[in-house]
Each structure stands twice: as structure tokens, then as C-alpha cells.
Image 1: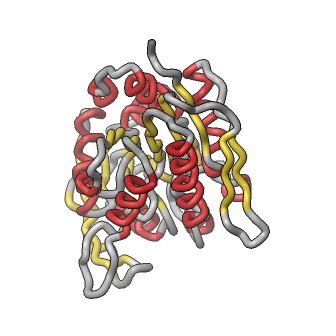
Image 2: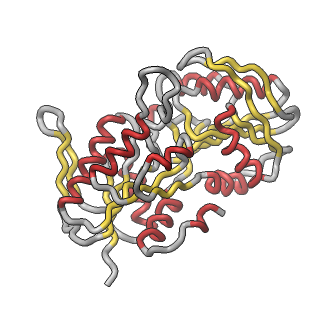
Length: 313
């Protein structure tokens, strides 16, 4: 007899979790997540999880510390409730930007979070568009890494852009992602060569590739303060691009991001709902696509012990 599939959610992705459950045709698991009077996270699972295949959906997004603790405590609670297998579903894997020791006396937080998830009791991890592919190697448990480019490609088919398209990588680190988009869209590739002034500012140098007279689509895994994105937009426009769009998976959108986007020449910022966007940040130039169908299909395939390779085509 196959074990029952249960889906629980932390506070950061409640709407996404409900959408995933609709696709799976099941109810969202019943759990209370709140705080003690001193601010400590309190979790209680209100239904039987013994022997079940459990998926916990939680992005490690703002407030990142609270989101991470909620996730770890939920996993611990489910482990102690004798769940047979626990899969941590992280639409957005936070703390991923420090993935190597590139300066003296700095941590590798991506590895730290991988260790915490494993020690808490996660048996498997499912995530979308990691900031760096090598993070997969930080885990000693299975990790399934999904990509959002199919979601953006499907949207592009519905929203027909006029003119030739060129995919633009905003920096050298995003070349692999940009190449995958260019291959799927069957179009050219350009790269923004920039040099970072400090951890908050980046100076654009020049564009490698032809963007003149074309519709440019800048692709990246995340947009935080939008500094690099806006710099790339302005650089591409100066080189003669007709219009500039951006397809970015994770809308962190912190600090001056919204104001920078408003003042920029960006035609549209297309993101996913891996991180919920508050109403105060929703402007007309932001279009949100859902990863619920992708994650729901992945969860169903993991539960049924079926290959996920079809999701990468």
C-alpha cells in the first residue's frame, strides 16, 4: 500500500502551497506556526503524519531568519511525528550567495544551510534555480534542481514579441543560464561585461554580442536591489536595443529595487512566485508567473518514484 502524500507549508509560501495542492487535488496539511511570547518559533502538526510521504514548502526569503527557523522546526516536528520521508521544497534557496570562500574570514552559508536541513531530518530537497549549481554538491541527501526557463518560454509563446530577440546575460556568472534560454528561444546571445565596485555597486564596461535593433531579454536567477539589472538595461539600450525585458526567477526586490525599476527603461520584469511579492511592490511593469504546476508535477513524480527528467525538456 502506497504511503499517503502530505503537503505542509511555512508562512512564506502559503498561497503557492495552496496552488500546488490544487494541482495535486489534495488539501494542504494542517499545522500551526506562530511564536511564543519571547519571539521563538512554535510549530504544531495537527494531523497524523506517521508513515507518510511529506513535502514541506518554504522559501528561505524575507524575513530569511524566521523562514529558515520555521522550516527547520517543521522538519523536526514531522520527523518526531514518524513521517516516513520528508522532502524540503525550497522554491527559493536563501543564503545561497555565499557559496565559496572568496575573501578571508567569510562563511559559506549555502553549505551551512545544507547541513542544517540534513541534521533537522530532511531526506530530500527540491528547489528551483539555485544561485550557483555547485550548491547541489553541498548536500549528502538527494537534491532535485528544477529550472524555470520552460515557464518563461511558455509565456513568451503567448506574448509574441515583435522583432529579433537576443538573450542577455547580466554578468559572466549567468552565462550558462542565458545560453540555455538562447538555445530554447533559438536566438542570439549577448553578455554584459561588468566590474563590481563593491558589494552594492557595479560598473558596466561593455556588451559582448549584437543587440542593436533587437528586443533584448535579460535573464538571471534573482533580482535583489535591481542595481545590476538596471545597469544592464541602460547598457543594452545605449547599444541600440529596441526594447528590454527581464526574465528573473526569484523576485527578492529589496531596498531601492522598485524605485530603480520605475526609473529604468525596462519594458517588463517577468518573475515567478517562488517569493511572494507584497502589494506595495506590485507595479504595472512586473508580471508574475506561477511555478505551482512545475512543483506540483515534481512532487507527484517524486512521490510515485518516477523520473523527473521530462521536466527539463
